Length: 330
Image 1 (cartoon, rainbow, N blue to C red):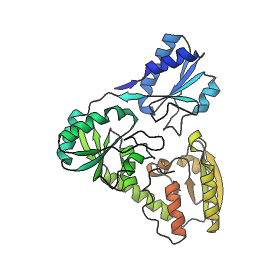
Image 2: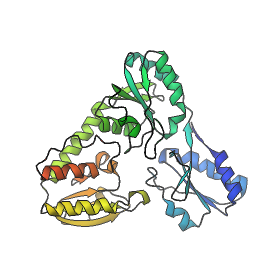
Image 3: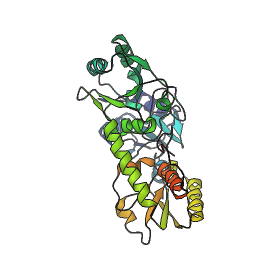
Image 4: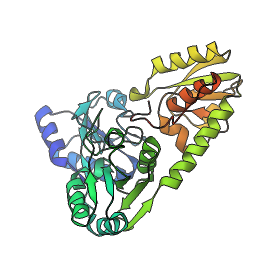
């Protein structure tokens, strides 16, 4: 069950005494956010708006929503990083209290004698040391990588993997605590090493390496298809943490050097339906969120920044190498 740090929320409200507040977080914990909003209204007798649009991470806080609503405080719940606020939004922890004891012992049976890198997402950070102890006591050599960027030690995002990539020369594989193939496949791609999900809900240990390689094959095919394109659309994301205009202009300049026609676009939500409305474009590069390109289906090639850099190398007859093997995909 997800436990929201309501004590900190209440403390912020008592200190700042706003006339109203707004709250958002990942889709998976919206029911808990709804309950927190009701608890706020009950305790302080103020409106508490639940922002029900998607929020994928600290690049997508929807900080403008609070301004539009005129709320005194906006809380983003469940995207823990190594700071307590960003873009005038207060970040609130939400932890999952599910136990890993049983599945950690299963994992030890499979990986006994190996050296592994232990990683997780925001909801399970508080259980890292306990799982490390269980694995260590059962014959697994466990390492937890140091944080970098916005990340705490052992923490990964869907596009940011510093604690994992820092251990690449020291470990034989990675173990991700949680249920998310989304995060685990990113680890596998950014390190090109075997990666396992330690899933406490199904009490299973599953390897996602093959799944990640399928994502990579699809991404590589899109790059080669884009290499045949004559006209490109470069897409800037309009969400506050996805406004990478300099990268967009760089891709425009470099593609034009290769004789390509390039047009700039800006979108809040990048979907196949929206892109199909744009005519005369053979392929796209989007600099908003790298996972949009790897995890979604499009009718035309839609490359992320790492894929875009690989494309430029192909056009220059250079080796594109392991284009996903980066600590941060932006």
